[in-house]
Image (cartoon, rainbow, N blue to C red; front, top):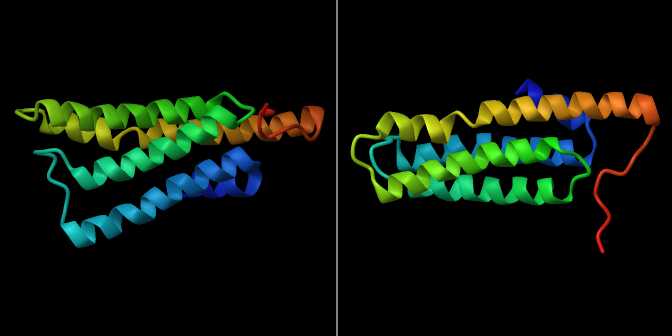
Length: 138
């Protein structure tokens, strides 16, 4: 959990909100499995689809408002996870490994985007000073 901690303490609002979103998912996942049992990846996991959908919504909201490009990468990785749930809902025969991979591995590009975004934020602060976290609305 060093990447979310780094982003939370060294980043600005978009980095902190993304770190919190990822941490909430990391905390919700074991609670979900304690209640509903271990993941099977043999059929659509509705609980994970809901958790992943909530994470996608949060990351999209951050990406659409943030004055940065990297949140789009994190949201795109989460969209890939959601596509795994959709694929499993349509056709589940013989795709258990693919379902596991497409729903479990997107966290790595998300963490990569978060750390790169936080490093870019720190560099930008040193180079130009304070700048707007969010795009203006209107």
